[in-house]
Image 1 (cartoon, one colour):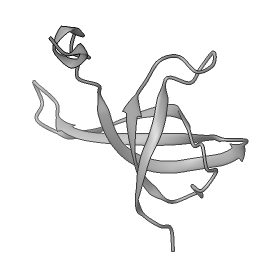
Image 2 (spheres, rainbow, N blue to C red):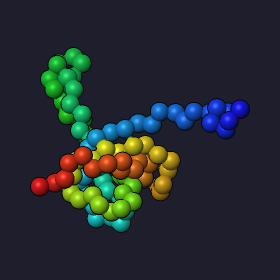
Image 3 (tube, rainbow, N blue to C red):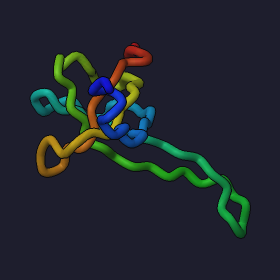
Image 4 (cartoon, helix red, strand yellow):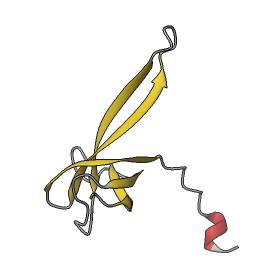
Amino acid sequence: MSEQQTAPARGARKVRVGRVISDKMQKTVVVQVTDRKAHPLYKKVVQHRVRFKAHDAEDSCRVGDLVRIMETRPLSRDKRWRVVEVLERAR
């Protein structure tokens, strides 16, 4: 049997799309992910915002960029995500 068949499959990693709101750190960006959903009782649309610190190996992201981030192993005390791709550059 080959080694690929015996190795256990890695679990599905979470993927999010958000805006870069800070790039002041080296190789790290802060990404804000906004989710809009209706309140379960009152049905008013509410924005839920979460901030993630993501690893940006090339240091290519700038404030305002739309990026896709993926969950990864802990890289530092706060960093558990990495930038997979830049979907849209800031104008």
